[in-house]
Length: 249
Image (cartoon, rainbow, N blue to C red; front, side, top):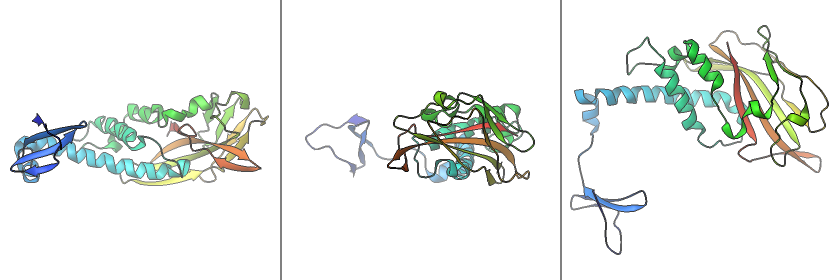
C-alpha cells in the first residue's frame, strides 16, 4: 500500500492497481487478494469468519425487531447510534449463551441467564436523555398488574430539557419473544405534565396485560414538548426523548 502523489488523485482500478481514499488520503495498492465469497463458504480456515457472520446476522435480526417494538416510545425521533448501541447489547447477550456452540449462540439463551436480564435492565438505551436521571424518583412496578408508580414525585426535580414546558411519560410492558422475534406491546395511556404539576404520586397502568408470549420488559419513555400559543410542539433535540427498561419478568 502506498500513498498517491500527483496533482489529481485517482479513484478506481487501473492496470491491476486499486486507487482509493483511506482516512482522507489517496492510496494505491495492488488489486486482488482478500477473501472471496467461495473461500468464506468453504475453506476450513474461514470457519471462524462463518461463525461470526452467522451470529452477527442473528443479532441484527433481533436488533431490527426490538427497535420496531420500541418504536411507539420514540416515534418521529432519530437517535444517534441507536442501532449500533443495541448491536453491542445483543452481542453481549448472545455471548452469555452456554448451550449452543460458537456460530449458533443466540440472544434468547443469553437472556435466559440471570446476568442477561440484568444487562437488559442496566443498559443505557438513550444516554443523551437518561430516564432515571430525568426522573430521579422511586420507580416501582407492581408484580400483579404491572402498574408503574413514581413515589415522592416533585415536578421541580424533573430534569427538563432546555426550552421544554411539558414532559410526556409513556409506559408499557413489552412482551417480547427473543427466540421467534414476535412481540406484543401493552401500553398505558400517555401522561403529559407541565411544570406546574403539583401531585406527589404518578401512576401509569397498562390497559392490557402480557400473556406470556416471551420476556416481559417494563419500558418507560419520556418526551419533552414546548408550549407555543396554547399548542404543544415536540422538541427535536438529542436530549428530548429517552427510553429505559425498568424491570424484566
